[in-house]
Image (cartoon, rainbow, N blue to C red; front, side, top):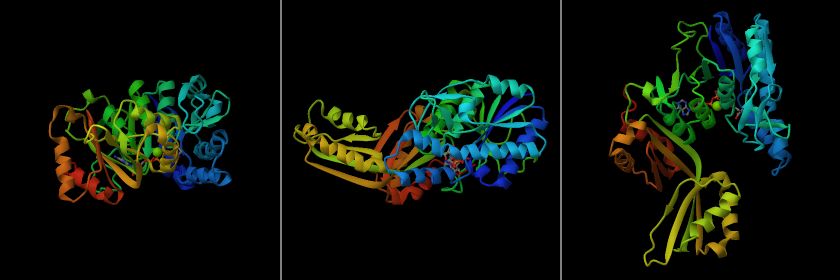
Length: 417
Ligand code: ADP
Ligand code: ASP
Ligand code: MG
């Protein structure tokens, strides 16, 4: 007997037929004698619809009310799955975030989980009841519903798995694992049997939305054995109930990976924008004068490039922000123009950040050079570059996103098995 948390994403619960199929996956594990808790997302497209309604109600809406609206999608699917399970003769009960409770901080719209009391769920699992938990939602310190940011049901699932000390957390989605790159962009992408936590963290934070970044952090910290696998396969196909080696991708410590490649995957993030400040005074404090006000206004700055000045007095500074924040950033910078002291401000939206990720880069030289050469051969111009020990990120024009992903994917031989 094992204790398993099963999470089903939006496409897996998109309609009643899919929810019935999910119930069969759950039944398989219950019939095998395991204790099971389930976490569900809203039906696919639902959260987007709810978000757009809050914007329609008022572009400058209250984040607490945003949360009470957008959390509702998961309330529906948790109840429907509990009913579908009961219909199959399984003892099941739905749970909203506040009923457990899943305690979060006060950052409505992007809250972080602080504490989960798993006692009641554990007690009921012991009595053979399946808990069907609404993902994405929690309870803030103000006793109001909070939500965990887009894709947050992954984080709900891993956090609950940690709280109930589950043997495994299975993230069921519309692909059968984590691939070398988004299989929707590159059909030659290969499924990885295992990926290291650090690599998955980079993949997720650099745009691969298959897992929310925070869920990977929690899995790493609390050592939750997490698999990404498909809900679309026949729930009763051979091997689906394999306890130690289920189909899919295991997120694990790098020591568990025997054959480590230099590059593991390629990720991309759309909707990046670049802002350049021209002819800035080249003196101490100028960066603080630029990035301080942006941070105070909650604008996330990513890549930063500063040119050397020709005569030691003036320089240029270029950096990226999410496209949705450009207008706000330009306004904030213009308000501080005098203190910063720049001549001209320029911006360009519709850019894409393509990233090459792999732990093997730590010990291999020339990985970046190969990327630059491959992109140059395709005539793709590079606008900015950042690197860390295990990743290289390259900013390019959005029109070349798919070509760049495919070019880098084949440049490192990722399409060859
Ligand atoms: P869910 O609704 O189940 O949470 P998501 O849409 O959030 O599913 O995440 C799954 C999607 O992530 C896939 O359909 C795929 O297009 C995308 N994706 C991006 N990068 C990768 C990758 N490297 N491996 C697998 N899927 C990826
Ligand atoms: N339904 C939420 C979203 O679309 C949470 C999730 O699916 O993980 O972002
Ligand atoms: Mg998701």
